[in-house]
Length: 302
Image (cartoon, rainbow, N blue to C red):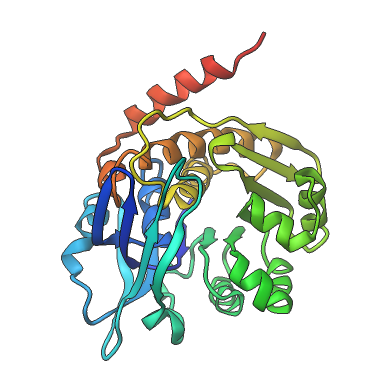
C-alpha cells in the first residue's frame, strides 16, 4: 500500500556525551520516511526554507522515498532545533528552537500523493494535521503523533484531531499528560475514548505498549549498547511500524500491529548508533531481519 508521511524537515544541532553535530538533516518526517523505506515505498510532504541545501535529501532519494512533496518556500527559513542529551540520554534538553517555516501555513499535498492509503501525520499543530488528513480521502489508515506543547496549549484542537484519526503514537509522558492518568494501561484506554482505534505508547529503553479495543501488548526493546544520539528514535519506530503494515497490506489488526511494532522496535534501535540519519541511511532490510531474529530469541520465555 502507498505510504505518505507529512511533518517536519529540520536542521538539527545535537550535543551528546559522545560529541556534537551541527545543522544536520533531521525532522520527524525524515526519520519516519527513512525507517519506513526499509519495508516499502514512501512519499514525503513537508516544507523547508530557501536556505535549505537540497543535496541533504540525497539519503532519502537513494531509498524508495518520493520527495516531490518537499516544498522550498521562498523568503522562509528552515525549521531548526538544538538539543542536548546528558547522562543516560533518555530525554533531550531543548537549547534552542526556531520554528521558522513551521510557523507558517502547512504543506500542500501533491495531487499525485492524494491516493495514499496509509498516512502518518508526524508531530505538528493538530489543526494542520486535520487539514492534511482532509486532503486524503482515499486513506484507509491515518495515524498521528503529538507532543506536550499541543496537549498543554491546544487541547481542544488536539481532541478534534484524535476524533479524525485511526491511531495515535506518543510517549509515556505525553500519554499521562493527555489523560491525567499515571497508569499507562488506564491512560491508553482513556485515549481510545477520544476516537482512535489503537494507541501505541513509547517507553524509550523500556519498549512500547499497544492498547486497542481488543488487545493489550507489551513490545520489548532491542537492547542497544551503542547509543550515540537518540534523536529521531521515536519517529523511526513509527516508520518501521507503519512501513511494515504498508508492505504487507494488512489491516491494523491485533496480530499485524504486534508484528509491525517488532519491526519498529528494531529500526528504532538502529538510528541510535549515529548522529543524524547516518546509521539509518546505511541500514538494509537484512540488518533488520538479523536483529529481529535476535529480539525474538531474547524475548522467548517458553
